[in-house]
Image 1: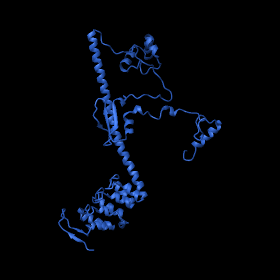
Image 2 (image 1 turned 180 degrees about the horizontal axis):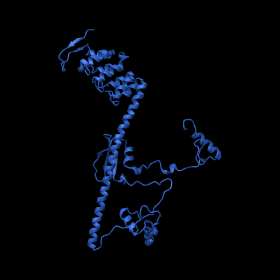
Image 3 (image 1 turned 60 degrees about the horizontal axis):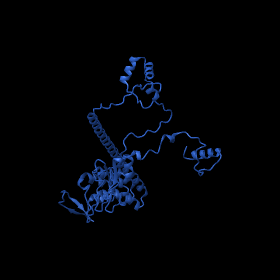
Image 4 (image 1 turned 45 degrees about the vertical axis):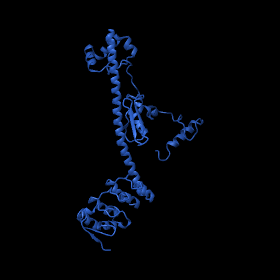
Length: 369
């Protein structure tokens, strides 16, 4: 069939078309004519993203069985000449949709590596992964599922960083409000004391300043009941009153509430120092837009939160409500005889040697050593 000639297009290009509006580049891509595709890509750059009556571009025409075995080579040639990898047909199908439905794994990998959108949906709402599953393209489906998992994780990590920034801002706001309250209380106390004629309250200062390099632990009752003995110990260890003065001026004093403690082995769990935001911040999901939102007790205005599930938002914003499942007790040594065997019900008494044998079988089973 001889092609007709269309003159005077909006790009001022002479485009040879068939009855369906297919250009010569469309036909070369359809039948996998690599030399023609390369030649037309260089001589006619306006044809690279030209459309037919159905909105198909040359990059869409490549995804067909007729273009084999030059399908991937023609695709690379089009991409080198500036083909749009996310351009859609009238039905909303991208080149990745067509490659997935045809089971073209190599073309799928080329498109994804070039930046094709793996989450794109056509007019029916199908993603490339959906079409690969519908047409039983298992290899393509596995690859696209892995790519979608990576995209989801990248998106989740970005949102998690936003949640961490939001948590820091909310903690600073809570601390600022607490500081303002404390300042107001101090002002009221100073005003009351001034009216009553009382002297202002002073901060408690310890009577004994213990160096951080102190080698002997002083108990709290010793440091308060016998200050002369503590002073004598400080002078004896530092070498004289001159060293004691230099130490007390350069080194920060220790807390007088409890003595120095030396921990051997596992360290005890320390409670979180950050304020608890559960009484100050509320998180929920909007019933209409299904978007997460939050509000504070000092600002009742709902504000958008990072797009994450509510359980993840609550774990980041309210860490005290979700303590860690791994504690130092999990790493304490245990006697192998006392370890309960998973194959026996709770409370069953067996010989200690039987317990040891069953435990070794579970630990040394294939794949675990």
